[in-house]
Length: 372
Image (cartoon, rainbow, N blue to C red; front, side, top):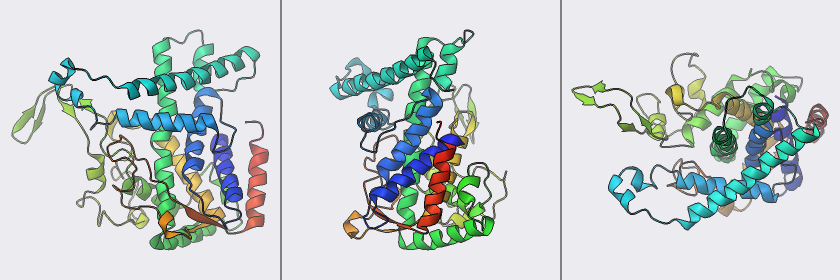
């Protein structure tokens, strides 16, 4: 996908520059927050944030979406479960503030798109197609809902998994995983064309297994959003009536020792001997008809990013051990009551494997994506 080609190359190019060829440790968080956000913005608006990781719009969207995720948490809204509390609604000035800040940048993004449509400079995108389609039957509220979902969903999942995957690769065990991953990449692509081929194919099983294990181990939404049953359900000797609210404990499912041998061990190899179609490999995307609609895009983003990062760099621990990441799947998040995983800040080193080859890959990607 050209979008993923552009965004992964941009992130790696800036990591290369900011780490000063691997001599300076960096925090990967903002680079891959932008990677995921720009992918969503391009799909939905045909717009991307061109600035650096210090871009004010980027920082504003990340800050506000993290706050909104906290407000939406299944553990932070007691009035959702105790109806009596709704008689005394609390005034939450913070939620009002963040809603207004969110409305501001959502309106800005939409106006930017409308202006491009008027000038004939817009690029194919979801919202643009809806606006220009005279037969589109979506009202303003429905269009707004789509836009909100596209902006927030990308920041909810992909960055957390990608960032914590990088964190683990910098660990002692992660060095072994990197070595094997690089070896497997070179077996499949001995001519060094993995950088381009990973955009259209997925032929390195160990990288696919690594992605699945990152998704399982670092579950980004531990308690999924609620669902309501539409009919009575018989379970053992009990009947659960229609209208009952259910929460899926995705964390518990991903660490179920009946399904995963040694679940608290990070082992990509567990997925290498599992045949396709043998069941749900993990519950990072939820399950059933309401599972994450963007799971295929997320998998493609993660596969491409991990393959390119490992091809370009050896990830090593930070020189100052105080900068080491927290690798516990619960303690690694900055806010345990938030709906989604928010990795604690940390730093790692990115040592270039082959500077000449990396420069060539970047030049080729820049040429392919120059019109995006």
